[in-house]
Amino acid sequence: MAYLPGWASTMAVNVPLNNRLARWRQPERQWHSFQRSWIPANHLRAALSIGGAAGLLIPQHP
Image 1: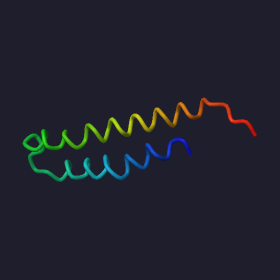
Image 2: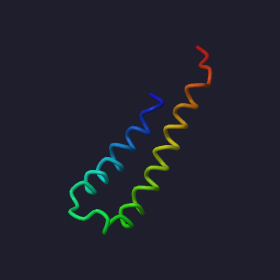
Image 3: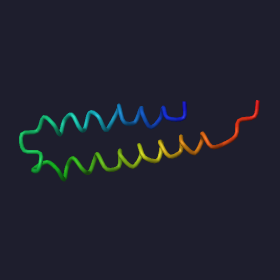
């Protein structure tokens, strides 16, 4: 379950942004606008994934 927040962020934000970029006829013209949304979302995704992986290292006591 530790991976779930990173996956959810990817599906909710990064994938739709990537799909929008793929539909643009001239993506280089909108690249700056795209980056303003995508980069923070990617950093969030990375932080959530790292946090989830770190959580797996914490011993679980029954």
